[in-house]
Image (cartoon, rainbow, N blue to C red; front, side, top):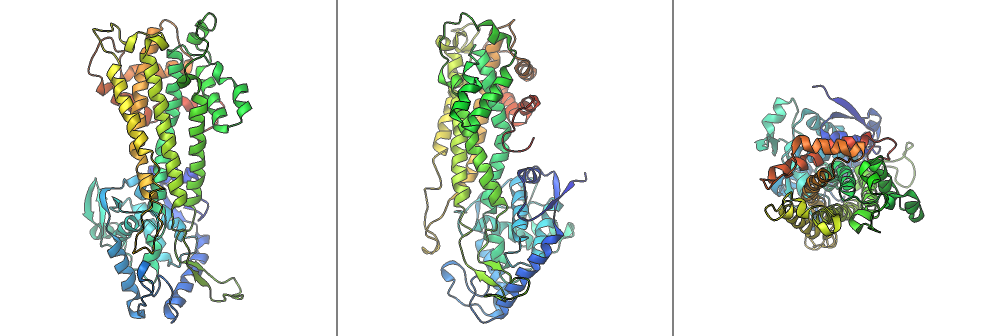
Length: 526
């Protein structure tokens, strides 16, 4: 299959571009206009390497060893040793989608022309990405400052032909795979090893992976939440636009709009519009725009931060080429040490995402509890056809409660837990890599909670027949019933939960959501 080519203009990646890289839908190329800036910054490093002045990362050691001078003859060995010594990650390998993002993000960052690497470095990153090769990168070992050192070192070691690739989930030596793909192993020049491992590309890729993975789950959560409103014969009054305009929170306004669109023309709602003795619905129904809308705002903010980070230069030291005339206070350019490698923006965004993901699952768990409570939902106890003889959804709710509780623990902020490293030279770190990595299991937990709610809400609708829900929600109910029959009596329910959860994660409910007219998208262009 021939893939579409995505031309990367450094500093101008969009969320749609990142989504395509994440999905493996594109090959990438760097806009040729970036070549001038790349060459100019590489020339600055070349001059620094040939000079006598100490320059961090070019002719000195690293971290606490920055005061150690390295001879000109050993500059290439210095960079090679840096990659070898920093390839110390542990744990399960990062997924191919995350590694694809790492390769593309690193290439895009270096191509902005502030890292001092030769075009060959960027070309190798691009070729490995486009060949479909996936460097073996252990998932644990980065504290998210001084760059994602260990994971990026493993990625780079594979480019050098000394590391490993991931093939069908198994580790394989990189050199023969590079050879088979026609890719020459990369040989490092001055500063290039440091440029490859300094940066936030692993933590950013992990956080983007979570953002992209959670988007269809959140869309499914909105659809399922609306189905539960009808199953519980809830009111659509709390979604009145006048309420939400008065508060002015954009996520809340949008979520209320989603619910109105999902519930429009429901026979169930029309049947109890008059004469219902319930004055107000419980918060898990009534406050969905306020709760999930706040989560949506948090996720939209994270998307903006992560997009900025994906386009950023997070190397150190940074290389500033002279202006076109080569005049001014730095006629030969400059290498300036700073701290752009510190991933605090990613860490804080990932922590915010964690809370949002946990809250989407938490309110879904409360909706399940409401559905099985006959005193609140007015449905049979535990949604069982013959309560007592059958337990219905009693223990399915327990599973949802356990997952919601687990997410609460995982939502504890990672960014507040700094530990000094490198003999106290690196004395405050972000923990962004773990902050982002822990989002994937949280999303799985929330998806399972939503899968259970989907089954429970569909069962509730069954009890209200022959009344019908809205056309959109009837399509959802039909989709569930294609995979999972109504629970007429107690049976082995775990396979149904798995099938319902797949509807949450595979985009099936998202497709129904996105067919609704005139709805604002979440954070990625539909």
